[in-house]
Length: 231
Image 1 (cartoon, helix red, strand yellow):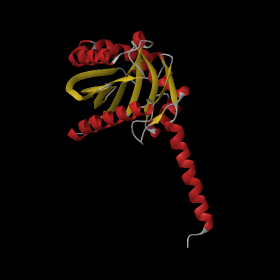
Image 2 (tube, rainbow, N blue to C red; image 1 turned 120 degrees about the vertical axis):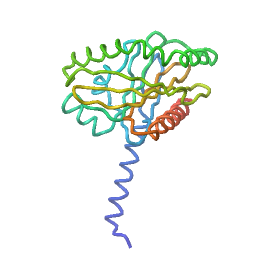
Image 3 (tube, rainbow, N blue to C red; image 1 turned 180 degrees about the vertical axis):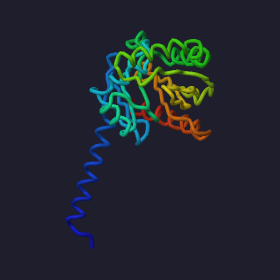
Image 4 (cartoon, rainbow, N blue to C red; image 1 turned 60 degrees about the vertical axis):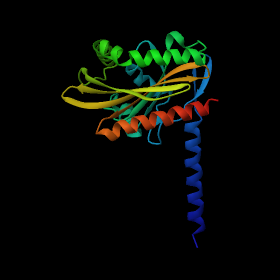
């Protein structure tokens, strides 16, 4: 028979863990006069919180406003302690500033998704140098850059999935900082949530073809749970 004290401790630990998961999954974020529930994309990522979310803002384009940032706990601790981290896997949720307060119909979303699919790769390549310079300017302003960031060799992955109110596109890209370089996989999911447009980005270091499958599966699963959580 299990020791009653051990049973009580296990029960307490379980309740605390469940409470932590509930708190993490029930956090709401404001954008465009709406409140959004944004569960983490995977169990291994946590939201940075309002005090440290600002440190991720330099990763969002100026045309968007960051509303949530998810990172691995170890990376987040380094970010908090040192003001900089070589992020391995992370995710960002952003809202387009010009359309933050606009109601988007299903028909309009379809048109936006089709336009995004056509322009995604070309627009990224065309503005790559501008994006790179903007990231470096912001990092230097925060005194958190160990060296200039270089974005290079983008490879389009095409459409990852498409369904009503959600579609996603993927890309591979080399990212170099100082004398370190890694290949990153990125997924961009366009979501129509409560008649608003959200841009959802996921990033992870590319290892092999399984990384692309991880991005595709994770993005689709995350899109589904965000839409379900905001009905």
